[in-house]
Structure formats: C-alpha cells, structure tokens
Length: 87
Image 1 (cartoon, rainbow, N blue to C red):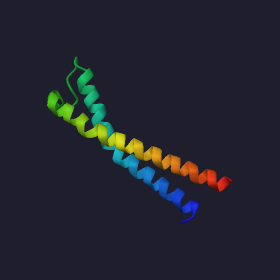
Image 2 (tube, helix red, strand yellow):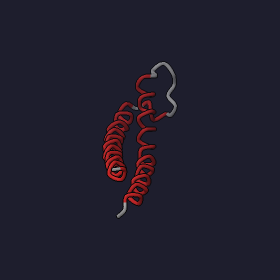
Image 3 (cartoon, one colour):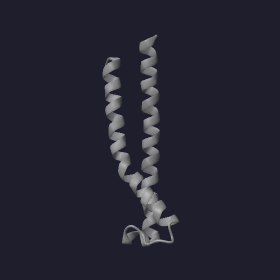
C-alpha cells in the first residue's frame, strides 16, 4: 500500500473516532453538570439519580480513553509515514 493511500485511510479513521467519541463526551458533560451544578434543577430528570450519573461515567470514560489512545497511535503512524516520504 502506498503512503498517500494509507494517509487517507488514517484520516477516515480519525473521522470515525470523532463520531464514536461524540456520545461519550456528551455523557461526561451531562454527568459533570449533574454532579457540580447542585443549585439548579438538572437538565434531564434522570440526572437526579446519582447511580445513573456514576454509570454514565463508568461507561463513557473508558470509551473516551480508548479513542484517545487510538488517535495517538494513528497520529504517530501518520507522522512516521510523512517523515519517511520526505526523506
């Protein structure tokens, strides 16, 4: 596989990671809002339940971490490919 083709595939994988990462990031944002904004009424009724909020963190944080690790690996691979192409 040539370098340009692999770089295009890496870009597509970055887009997929971004789409995968959207929902867990929203869950984290809602959870943080529910945890730290005690003075106001929560955005959604289910955010009053502490167990649900903690479950949102338990589900979302590993997914976000996986996306970050995958993105770092892809970025380093792209950088290596570009460095080899320029030499």
